[in-house]
Image 1 (cartoon, one colour):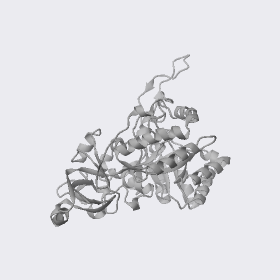
Image 2: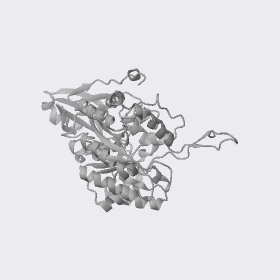
Image 3: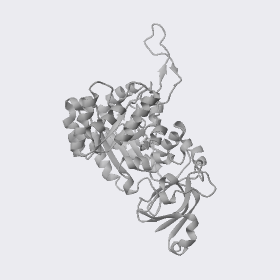
Image 4: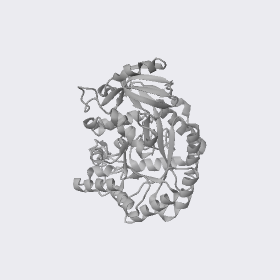
Amino acid sequence: MHLFRRARIPLACLPPTLQAPPVGSDPRLEPWAECDVTVSGAEIVSVVPSHRTSSTAALSASLTTTDLEGVLVFPGLIDVHTHLDKAHTWHRAPNPTGEFWDAIQALGNDSKRWTEADILLRAGFALRSAYAHGTVALRTHIDTGAGAVGEPGHAAMQRLRQEWQGRIHLQTVSLCNLAAFANGESHRIVELTARYGATALGGFPQPNPDLPRQYDALMAAARELGVGLDLHVDESGLAHAECLRAAAEAVLRNRFPNPVACGHNCSLAIQDPARAASTIDLVREAGIHIIALPLCNLYLQGRTRAPAAAGSMSAGPAQTPRWRGVTLLHEFMDAGVTVASGSDNVRDAFYAWGDLDAMEVYHQSVRIAHLDTRLDASPAVVTTGPARIMGLLSRGYGTVAPGAPADLIVFPARTFNELLARPAADRRLIHGEGFRPRQIPDYAELGSA
């Protein structure tokens, strides 16, 4: 066994009985409690306030002990929304305009190269990066449409799921076009989902009169498969886009019993406040979970250009964005809806940057969505929130509690202010009863793939 003393754990990640900040501190500014954490094998067996150390002195004498000296310690992070089949394709399918539909075209063309071996190389590199940053669970969407796209991705993820067992819990979602699914393509998508053990059916619904029937068809298939839904919803600045509202209505109409998550939800932020509030009420009633993708939506949304010059075939110069695409996180939290933030795309046409570092996602969520005003709840967006969405909270993921996995991230920061002020700071990783190496892979390994 190993005793890690004086770890400052975010209150949101502790059991309720330990969610008390130090006497005299303000949890709005520094929402942590200093604890001693005992690990046996791969599991946390004890978490007690550090001021009770004297009562455990006899026990600690027989333990390997590390004094963490009062720095912040997070549980292993959880990335609930990624696209490993697209990752690290920027060098061969760039998107210089940064526009959403240009990204669709660029990656559609590149998908001809998505063999199982190609995806294994790129996705494996991405998982190694995520693990080096402290991620212990991850969900990826896999394009599962017409033609050859789909099976190579599912096959690659099945291999990676086995290879990474015990380090990263990997879940998959079959991403498809809802209209195509409802109009004849469902058989192959359902077959791949079942054969490769996907956790959920996914899709990118678009506003159209047939949307209720499309949702009904997807939910009927998911019910038959015994899986949930994880949807890309309203990823635009169009006020009339209400696919999130339609999803909630469909869940209630179908009495759909399995978990449902909706990612993006950007257009909700520019809709009439009363209409948005009523949609949030429906989401809460339907039990839908909400996933924000702040990095990718900051990149894609709000891009505008000045009018083209007379006679020119090209667009005018780029203009400063007026909005940044983040959904109504505060309002969802106030309504009691489970929320999370995810990486989304990494070094591909949808997002040119990123490294599957869920801590970067946390930093940017706090800054972009002003989660500093509810700092005590903020760590949940990359810990307990995604753990609940992925069905892993009951297994202790996202928490520092007895029975939870012994995966911890030790930061060189004593306070949240220090942590958020220096996001590029290094970190140490605990796995089981000791520290594990942190090896970030070299881009050269990808070659020209």
